[in-house]
Length: 176
Image 1 (cartoon, rainbow, N blue to C red):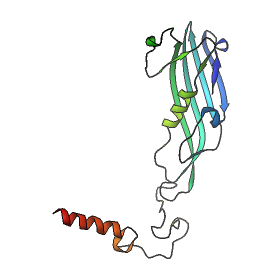
Image 2: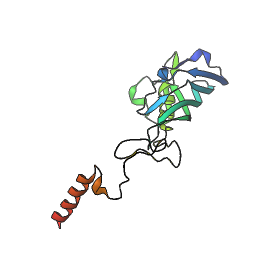
Image 3: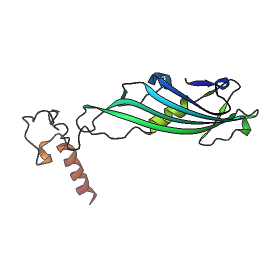
C-alpha cells in the first residue's frame, strides 16, 4: 500500500518521486510480467482540506507475443489525477465519482488509483514483430526461428480442426 502522510504535504505545490516494487501496488495481470520497479512522479497541490494529486508512472514489463508466445519487453506509461477530500462524517455524504477520493485524518492512500491507471494502459495484444509468423498449427514450432517439417495446410480437411469444420458443415445442412 502506498500511503502519503498528510503532514508531509505542504500547502500549495509539492513534488515527490518514488521507486515502488510492483508488489506494493498489487500489480497482477495474466500474461504480464513486471520486470522493474514502478517509477512514480507525484505532484501535490494542497488547498486547505482539498488535496489534488497528479501522478505519472512508468514500469518495464514483458508480455507474450500473441502469435508465437515469445516474451516481448514493453514500457507501460500511465497517469492519473485525483482530488482528495476529507472523509465525510456520514456515509450518505460520500459521492461515488470518478476522480474523487477520500482521506482520513492521517494519510491518503493512492494505491488503487495508481494500480488502476497502470492496468488500463496494458495493451491487449502485442506482437514481437509485425511480420511474426506464429506457431505451426500442427507441431507448435515457432516459425520465426525454424520452418517445421509439417506440410502447410491448404485444406482444413487435413488439420486438427477438420472435425469441427465438418460438424459445422453438417449442422448447416441439417438446418436447411
